[in-house]
Image (cartoon, rainbow, N blue to C red; front, side):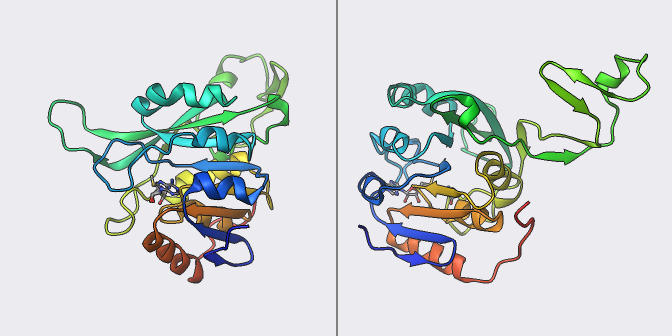
Amino acid sequence: MPEHYYRDDTVTLYHGDAREILPALGLTADLLIVDPPYAETSLEWDVWPTGWPQLASEVSRSMWCFGSLRMFFDRGPEFTDAGWKMSHNVVWEKANGSGFTTDRFRGVHEHVVHWYQGPWADIHHDVPKTSYSGPNKSARGKLSQTTHTGAIGAHTYTDDGTRLMRSVLYAAAPRKGGHPTEKPVNGLLDPLIRYGCPVGGMVVDPFAGSGAALDAARLAGRRAIGIEGREDYCDSIAQRLSCLTFDFGGAA
Ligand SMILES: C[S@@+](CC[C@H](N)C(=O)[O-])C[C@H]1O[C@@H](n2cnc3c(N)ncnc32)[C@H](O)[C@@H]1O
């Protein structure tokens, strides 16, 4: 059993190669949040860890995976050969772009693809809602109904002043100076975790980086296990998780 680098009531962190540690832990997770090296930069750690989708498929049946469209085109067979089926994707729109080439549109988004295995009905999927009081198109289309309540497909729809979160999530990237590819907790990791993992469930992040997903899971009332290959990043994660943090949303 690998030795942990950091542990508290809800989060455990391991230092090392995820491809060795993940199978050695012998765990089952409700949800994987994976932000792998895309192998598209000159960062020292940005090397595709061949074989990780197969190892991940042995840990959970549900996974959000960050990546560029190029990465998913290039590596797609590694996902599908491992048994992963794609359900859908969201786009993360960030305030500031990455990349400085002048011969193409300034890149201000990344993809997050949801993959699953087995029957869809067995996968926890609870789409977060946002409050909404704007005009309701469906209501306008059914003027004969006095209230907008009715059956749509297999679902009964009631206008309760909310709507499903949209598939483009805007969230400013965290401030510069920390981990170079840190993802924001609020507006991005938080809704992804709430969608795919029940309250009290287990999230696993095999490429933990800054520990943002571990932090997000904890703030949302989920448990988390992280793995990170660089010891200096593990040290930063341990410091981050040791600090008292403000609970932005609780475990709803
Ligand atoms: C894209 S970053 C993750 C960023 C993270 N999602 C965040 O919000 O901070 C990928 C991380 O994986 C780590 N890494 C690369 N190869 C690894 C491996 N084989 N095992 C474990 N960690 C690895 C890198 O050091 C890097 O911190």
